[in-house]
Image (cartoon, rainbow, N blue to C red; front, side):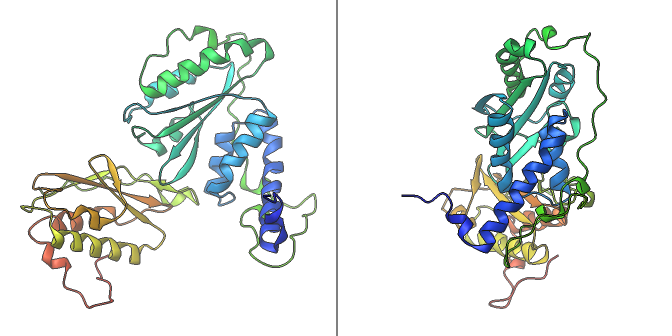
Amino acid sequence: MLNEYASLSSRRGFNRSLAHFRLVTAILDPLGKGQNLADLVDELEKNRQIEKAQIGPLLNALIVERMGYATVSFNMPTDRKEFEEIWNETGRWNRFDMVVAYHHPQLGITLINPKRKNHWEVVQDLGRQELMVLYLKALRDSDKALEPQALDALSNLITGLTAGDTAAFNDAAMIEKPVAAPVAAAAVPAAVARPAASGGPTPAPPAAETAPKPAAAPAPAAAAGDGGKKRMTPKYSVQVTNELFHNGNVEAWKNIVESYKSKYTALEVHIFHDGEKVNDINSLFKWGKVKHGDVLLFSVAGETIQGVAKLQRYLFEGASIRFSNFLKKDVNKVLHLF
């Protein structure tokens, strides 16, 4: 029989659980005062006060079980890169609070307040078959009957369809409250930022405590000021100009990616071919699988993203007849390219 308390039997497990409970408690007050959970989590991520693994449990515990948000989930039917219509339209829906959970296959759950332009700018694009879960709640009990209609309209907007008649989602008589600033980092006890890995249980803080030549890659979405929030760049293209993307090209790409990751250890490089993520670069070496003129895609994920333009240039050369330039290295050593 599974012991649900097994994680509490170790000091590390106990401290991680205690830190999560404190985080939930700290969020409850601003959430109860009308702040949006996506706004709160965005601020906490930027200040390194929450881990990705905590977002799913927070969603279910707070806005599903405690606050009773209506939900709907679906997989994106097509790719989507333009979101202006979403924030422009939902910004007028003053009868509801809404949260969109985007389940990114590499980054995990990203929470989006659909009314905020900057949240959609961070997402940049939604891929076909990726999971979206929508959460919506009427701010007044008298509007609860509108929730299913509003969820349908929101899902239509996200998938690129028309929202239909949404006039009922705005009540001109409702007093418009100014958009509340997200919870400040100091509002969450410092103990929740990183659970203790060892030592005894962390004591509760005092009440007053706070805590062909490819185009140059555009500037990535993540900037240094984004703090601890992990981002992913758009997918950049690299055209194969060699007569075939053979074993030499594969080895060149492996050495280039290895060099990049040795320089930027906190960043991850993701490669895509034919709409699918490539988990092993060696799988690209299959006679005739990747040919002259084919396009491979890559993106970089992390907090402060750097060196993307140079990485794109090297990958382009590695997919050309100049691939041998990236094979000249000592055994068990890394090329110094970045």
